[in-house]
Image (cartoon, rainbow, N blue to C red; front, side):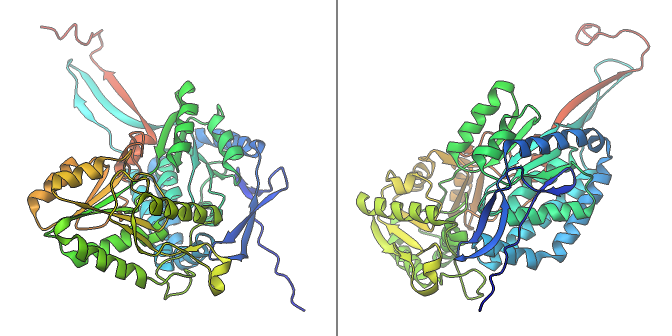
Length: 501
């Protein structure tokens, strides 16, 4: 007789201790490729749990902000070393809880490694300005100072990379943190927290509280104890967060939706463009804010491109991401699968031509998971809903166009502005596109995904609210500028008055 294996039970991390949620309740974390597999049980925390974590972060802030930044960097460096050692284990965990293939989860962990090393170095590079004063015997400079307690609400599609984008610059600037991971993928964020604790973060500096966004996220957002909020998720939820932060002028960073495009000119390397469209559209099962869910192709090569693109999509092997032969994994959960299926019906009803895919996959073992075929609609009109709304799944719309001006109008004719790409051998067209595309990120002869940690990441319009993640730009959000004047003239000097002559 088989004996049931008890699931691993996780706790919150508050003030340097692993503690149970006050409710005693838990949330199941299941494998989206096999819903029979229970990855773990995570706390269904309450507002009281979140407030306890915020109090711990507030109490730890004074000592942490006074810790020299290079010393904070040494802790991050140790964390990066541990992450490197455990990369494969963490990638396996992430594939089990999130579904994307191992090559991609390894990349997710590597992004966390890269960000941690980068921000460790920023412990010795938080440069300000020194500049001559307009008055004699006076010195002027600026320095960065931390904001306070930071509250983070993170998504399920990059469950270690995106938390690292927020946590590492926050910590190196001297802030303390409370993070609520996505309900679907808490394990990878927990793995990151374990590493940072092991690396030597003092108690209270970093806290994790698992639970529902409507409970834990709401408490973090509304608490008077948090001075900064960073959120990655949908534009609809981002708008709610922005409105909640506004009355108290709480510092707020929003990274939201995208409806990204690849433009293929008739002089492009067509096979390379197809490679980019496959990776951009179906990497992570299309569940990326930077996914290339639209491809605009110049009419001269449109037919050839669609044929090649559809053939490649049909050849993709869909299945469990732990299988080395798998090209694309499942949707994250049943609700997301239903959303994808509903948009397929919308596309059909709008008159788009189904060039590949279009169906749920549920033969054999796939019946236990949330799998959908890589799906391509051709002959699309740019105003169709499938070309305007973020689907967040393996569905790509292909749109024909005449001129580069037409392509730019199509690209810019959406509410989002995150990422865009153009495939062309014409340097003039490449430079026009990078100038005129209304997005925060532009790629030339590469797909819309592939951001590197040392450069700013983020978008415009309904994609973001002006702040950026990654690179030096992240320091600008997680710190405040303080300008300092030191007058050693031993007399009163009045700027703009005593220097008037």
